[in-house]
Image 1 (cartoon, rainbow, N blue to C red):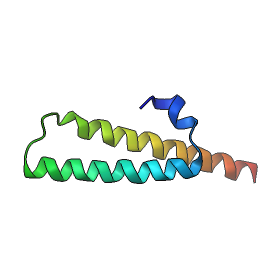
Image 2 (image 1 turned 90 degrees about the vertical axis):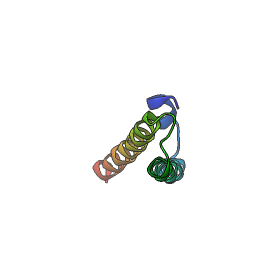
Image 3 (image 1 turned 90 degrees about the horizontal axis):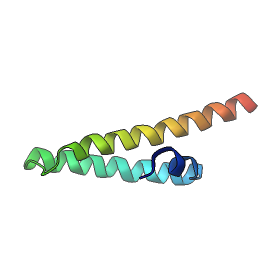
Length: 69
């Protein structure tokens, strides 16, 4: 995932869908890691940061909308 450029290019609806998908994938990774150790546990950190990036972009868009109103 290209960080800022790709995220800013998405529509708000796509961002919400991406947040749902990434959050689900993060939960799955955590569950799998609890049952048996992952080969690369840093994947959890990467997913968590991707979710945070997406949520940050959504929050910034919400703030811009409220400023315009």
